[in-house]
Image (tube, rainbow, N blue to C red; front, side, top):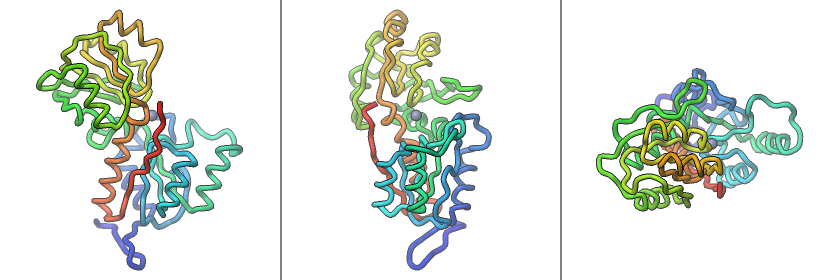
Length: 262
Ligand SMILES: [Zn+2]
């Protein structure tokens, strides 16, 4: 609460202070990523209300403005490996943000892999995974987890748990044991990690986006694969970060739900 101050009757926090807090909490500077993590577009210097969302897009921006947010905190930002030009949809997005003094802060891999707030930590919590170990690597950085449940869960019950908890629909490749204890998870688009899951003999590999290539690999590898949706496996991180900001700074945060079917 150290930096909380008021403007009129509304609690507020300086943008610079908020960004420093987020950069440090997420270890942004130490994680290699294609995404430019941190403040991507500068808006109002004072922040009263933060919208948390998975994707930077016009639908999210409009919702943020309707909800009177002056900062948007997203998992998928708009700057990936730099900007070649500021034209077309990118121009329109940046103009809209600037016209509405809406700050855009992005946290991609730092929010996938954070041991408490991260998308994968949240998924592992939902699945009650114990003895967690690193799983799924990107440029020397581990993104996901493997772990074991104290008691086995049936494949159908696991799918039902994911659908209910994440409010999602799952695609299932049911090629492994029906009773599952050992699970590996990598949120988002991580179908390419299936070989690691097969090599480690996990009972079930969970990721977001389906991959056609995985079908025969999973069948021949005798492994269950569950695709729980890129969007829905990556809601947990921004939601957790929103709760932390609310607690730390005393300013309102809200989750802006703009789901995709992917
Ligand atoms: Zn993603």
